[in-house]
Amino acid sequence: MQEYITIRGAKVNNLKNIDIDIPRDKLVVVTGLSGSGKSSLAFDTIYAEGQRRYVESLSSYARMFLGIMDKPEVEKIEGLSPAISIDQKTTSKNPRSTVGTVTEIYDYLRLLYARIGVPHCPKCGKVIKQQTIDQIVDSVMALTEGTKIQILSPVVRGKKGEYTKLFEDAKKDGFVRVRVDKEMYELNEDEIKLDKKKKHSIEIVVDRLVVKPDIRNRANDSIETALKYGNKLVIIDVIGDKELLFSQNYACPDCGISIEELTPRLFSFNNPFGSCPTCGGIGNLMKMDPDLIMPDHEKTLLNGGIKGMGWSLDKDSMGLMYIRSLGKHYKVDVTKKIKDLPKEFLDKVLYGTGNEKIDFVYESKTGTRKFTSPFEGVINTMERRYKETTSNGMREFYQYYMTSSCCPECNGARLRKEALAVTVGKKNIYELTSLSIVEIKDYLNKLKLSEKEKMIGAQIFKELNARLQFLIDVGLEYLTLSRNAGTLSGGEAQRIRLATQIGSGLMGVLYILDEPSIGLHQRDNERLIATLKKLRDMGNSLIVVEHDEDTMYAADYIVDIGPGAGVHGGEVVATGTAEEIKKNKNSITGKYLSGEIKILVPEKRRKG
Image 1 (spheres, one colour):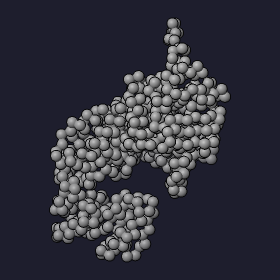
Image 2 (image 1 turned 120 degrees about the vertical axis):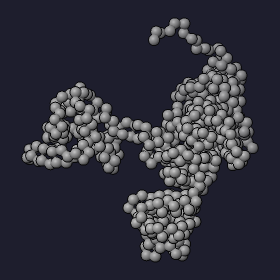
Image 3 (image 1 turned 90 degrees about the vertical axis):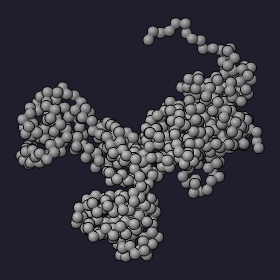
Image 4 (image 1 turned 180 degrees about the horizontal axis):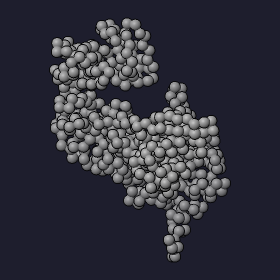
């Protein structure tokens, strides 16, 4: 195997036709002035070519999704490995990304809760156990006599596919009807074509009954059949009213609430089966803010007091007519300042009059128009228009009047109440991910489990401990797994990716890092360097673009690019260990390392 990455004739950006041999399987620091060409060598030449060659080795189908990087302007590069870039610009801004999902630790926690979690009733908090067929039949018989019901067997729940064979098998087994995505179909008559790229829910209609005292035996047989086909789940569809989900797995006998089988997807806020139905798994809701719609309470409603989109109160505007008519109806002087108006009246203006009808009179050049109707309210109207518009531009306009608020259903936990009712130890999955990483590790290690639970969770605990320790090693023990990934700094995001790469356990990879020490305290810097050395010792090559003194002393090899920036840079000034660089008279970096040049602390400071 080659000992060096050999580069000949590199001319990317300001690089001046440079030739260099960089040792493999070492920790190499590329340093120099800002703008000297460090990133041009490390990222735009070495990483770009390593990534391009690796992607070219894949199938044409895989290349469609990855996209090949442009070939860098270089005569020859040899000794390259597949390259991975760990830079500071890759933080996900997606509101669905958290520290837990980015590091994949959350996936192991979901598996842990699905396998050894203890379900509780979301309503009364009692530990709930599996239901028997007799208990399900009793719940059906408790419905009002004469109620029409359908017994449905949920054979597919939110999965992609065409399911042609499933329909054929159901028909052979004697079933007549199926419900697909809430639509009823006759198996003998209708041709059912499904989009295989979309998720579908399919229920076989096992029986249709009217609740009477003499249907117990028939209901028992039908429910047993439904449970058999529906993987221990049955849906009782009370026609024209509600649907009741029963499970042979878990149900509360007092509240009649059932929880389907505990699966990892139940604990995922990025899956409709686990996410909070109100906020869709985001944890926050965008709502119209009254303080943005009425920002200045010193003004009147008629004179610029309402700033809402579509509520300009011009001379002949409908908005003006609405406010005047509301004032007349409630006997309120709308020429007063907003701060002097009754709160009850302002609530009517903002949130509407409900079912109470108002007499409106609209006068314009074309005549006078009178009508009577409830008033929808400024905020309600704007929220409706925001939901209905298909224009992104209009949505952005409405968002000027909106603020993000915590979801009232899940209180920011992102998950549905059934998922939050499952605990390991005494904490549900959101309470656990709200702890810091070091606290989570401590909590998991102190759990008191039965022998069966220890056996089931052994591999999961092993993986969790290792991944949590990697984050602690790079100085991120203070983060919480529930923290939004978009709020991380560039350095934090880079160290998370670094920890993830250690967890992958690859060897023979070329890692290229962009100033990983930025913003770090010296204590954390030592941990970062230890992490880089660990990656190197696993059999990987590391090229680190860096200005940090400690990192240079820890490096096996230094490449100093310069001597100046821009057109004055792009040359290899010096190479070797930190001690060798110090002795090189051409290297500015060497002069600083040796102490020949210093930046002294000023004797006098400007006053703050």
